[in-house]
Image (cartoon, rainbow, N blue to C red; front, side, top):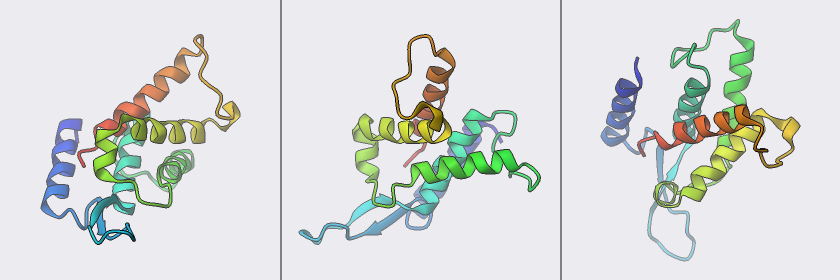
Length: 143
């Protein structure tokens, strides 16, 4: 499935049934009774799939086979880094680029714990390129 078809399929799924495909409508604010949209577990899995496919174009969006232990571990690392165990507001994700940058940082440094959250140096072009791929993959999520 190409990226355009995948983006269309995800968009269609999200607009057809937002409560089941990437959103959780919940009252997360105790001071107000207003409901807000949060990215739920399925939304984080869609994000992890998109980031994984961008980092591993040779695998793409196909299902990871049981013998592909490295890919499975990498996908789990991405998924765990994305999920902050709380509510990431859908609206804030797209209106505040710092949220997406923070999620890109979480994924990148989870994949590279040896960097210990230090800044990428100018001569580390491969790291900069990888961070950009992660950030761009996150920006394609049509929430």
